[in-house]
Image 1: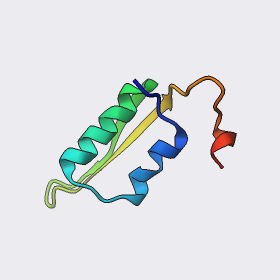
Image 2: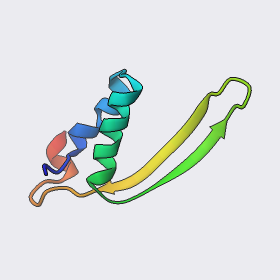
Image 3: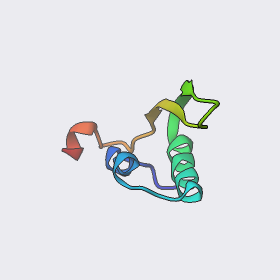
Length: 70
């Protein structure tokens, strides 16, 4: 399985997508992480709007570092 890089995650804020495609891409990020956690920051029961924050560490290939992605 290809390991993800920092560039692979940048699409999260840039690309609108369907819920099923987003689910698939976020799952790929989680599966390529050495650790991860989730926090529900807010939920509005009236509108159904929610804010979820994912925090983790990517399992980056050897020889790559965040400085290589600038």
